[in-house]
Structures are given as structure tokens and as C-alpha cells.
Length: 297
Image 1: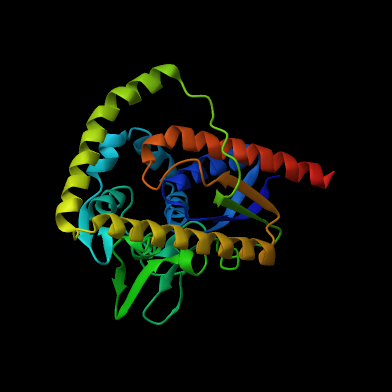
Image 2: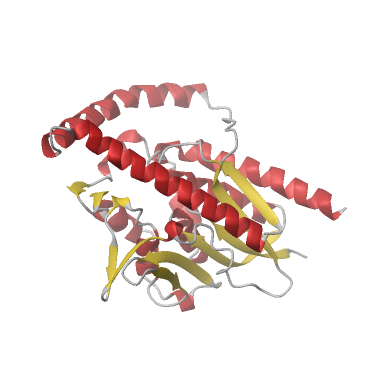
């Protein structure tokens, strides 16, 4: 008999791809996901799973190289965020038609931050697309989402790993997949042929980055170096805040199993590392599952 679980997925931008490997390994080892919740990229992966689209999304994301990723990024240089996000979100729509959360196969929850009313926004019904769009709106990176008279951003600033929001099921165990853990990063073995192909693609990618930086320097004031440092400072400060909020939630709500994945595994937009990230998630899940089973003995 399969062990029912309620699964919570943290945010973490591209690192959230590791959740795919976590989910696959959990199911392989006899766990049955009965309820799921997430924040930011975790909310997106959770949505893919709840709509039976995770395999389709995985197959697509594994085809991405650095140039593909760059083409999906529509820079706006706006004061509200560097990336408008229309290209990414329009692509996201191709994986699923908008559906009501209450019609999904299992209970689903996404969290965002309502900065108009200074509170957490919890999505348990209504448009799943709107829920995910709000949850992934990383401050200073993606432009915010707007709903009615409210402005919504990434839920990580209020609840980066929503252990208290997932719907618990009788007889379940609570499992959290956290991709921002402050632990060493052990890179999995990489196929040499794939490494060579990546290197050939790098030259085009590097040229795109140079063009972007030149454009940014044209738009920003003369003290652009300080301006860029400002964005770095904000992002690092936000990351520190969300990490400590996550640790507080983990300590308070104590999941039965915590799957930790290093925050050093990749950068924000490193979706071209998807194959590696899925494997990282799988290996982390194997370790945590083995530890959990040992504790039961």
C-alpha cells in the first residue's frame, strides 16, 4: 500500500526544476502525492503535477540551452522589474489551458504576497494561471501581477515554503522540498559529449549577454555600476530574508521529511541546466527517503 503524502515545494527560480526529480523519486519509492502546495517556481511545478502536465513540461525544459533561455527573457528595464515576463508566461500557457484550482485532481495551493494590503495571498480556488503568475513575480526581477486593486509579488517574501498552507490528508506524512538550502553543492557526473555541445553554444550566449549589458549601460545613469550593485544588494537581501523565513517555517511546522537541495546548484535563470537539476533533486530525495526509513526502524 502506498504512503500518502502532502508535498510542499519551495521557490528558487531555475533550482525549482530539481522538484521534478524529487517528485519522480518519491513516486518511484511508493509515496502517493495526495495534496500539493508551492511558492514561486514551486507553485509552477506543483501546478504542472496537479494537471498531469509535469512530464510534458520536463521534456520541453530538457531541450533548453542558454540561447533558448535568453530568448524567453523580455527585458523591460522598468523600475518595477527588469523582466516583463510575457514571453515566459505565454510559453507557460502552452502547457496548460487555464483551469480552476478547485477542479484539479488533488488539492492545490499557491502563495503570493499582497503588497497593497501587506499580507499573504493564498490561492485555493479560481484561476490557476493567475495564482502561478502572482506567485512567481520575484521582486525587482519580474514585474508584479495585478488583481483587482491589489499588486501581487512572489510569495517568498511572506511564506517561502508554505508548510502551513498545504491541505493535510488523513494518514499522510508532510514532505518539503527546499531548493535554497545553505549546504555544499555536489555536482553530479556530466556526460562529456553534452559538455562539448554546451561549450559550442556558449559563444552565442556570451554575445547576447554582452549586448544586454551594453543596452543596460545606455539606459542606466552614469553611475550604473552603483545602480547594478543596488539590484544585487536587493536580491541578496531578499534571498537572505526568504531563507530565514523558510528555516523558521521548517522549525515551526516540522515536516516528516525534508529534502534539501543546495542554493549553489545554479543561478536564477540557469534553466539550461535542467537535466543536471532533475538529477540533483532525485539524489537529494533518495538520501532523505533513506534517512526517513532509517528513523522508522
